[in-house]
Length: 439
Image (cartoon, rainbow, N blue to C red; front, side, top):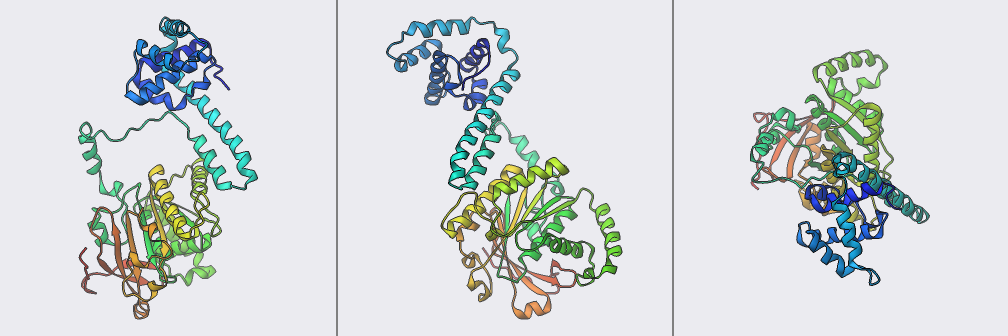
């Protein structure tokens, strides 16, 4: 398929591509030589692009013609291209004055072509039952656009960098459950980061994640909690208890509903701006592309864009593409979740289980990660929950900072677990000696 734009518009595109490096850099990735209606225009554009790729600048007309000579078909003469370039240079320049309109034309056509090709590819993939690859192709086609972000200009953006750094901690940081960690983290974690809690089965990974979600809500943040193990109603009941301090056993009685509703009114008024959505998926069915789809639905139908995404838990997801090795699959899932945090500008929390040694050691480190050491590599921050039977009986646990990309790591914090209202909190130092293990 070729452009259905007028010849003057196609001339205008080539004129801008060879004369305006800003235009070319924004749009060149969306143009393919075969899109042009005339073969000579296709070769002119291809020669401009190839020259830029090699020399990082746009060619003059004389250099452009020399480049064309090297690749033009043998049965053609260079005068044809000389005439075309002359016509392009002498065209009515009013055609290229409305650049935003030309941008939109090129972008819309590129998106249409990308979606068309993705659908064609998906027909083949559907026969092979490669559903994850179909999702990926359609998603890539839908995000085709001319947005260009070349990153941070180090010397030119000093003030902007430090303005971001000195923004209010309350709005920029996401507190963890533990004040000591927040101190080392300069107030908490940030958007575009991913954090993980590690523990053996039954020690409290999900319980910690709910506490972490509640802590974010107390900061007025919007939280999306995805559960792959427990029902959304049970997760919601845990939030009920932690946010209202009503004992969990009382919430299983019908007469507690009026009290719960009254206390939740207080919660919503006190923590202005906080919102919570909880969504359950069957274990082993969810991949990161489905999370993206859920985020789109929440924004479209509920105007809900989360600040924090909690995925409970990592091993119960599947990678976007089939990977035979469980080790590689878990590392890939962690990478995909971190990519989603960057893409959607949010903080991601998840959890993972230890291997069998996690039940036997006194302190869980990265050596006790279950199935795949690679899953901790993408993490910005990771903690482990450590608890003996005696500590469980006393409602105590030790929290160990396994990894911290930009702050202190390898230290422990004494914590309490109130099994009545399910609140996890840091123990005051006067109640239990603070233990520190130097990094």
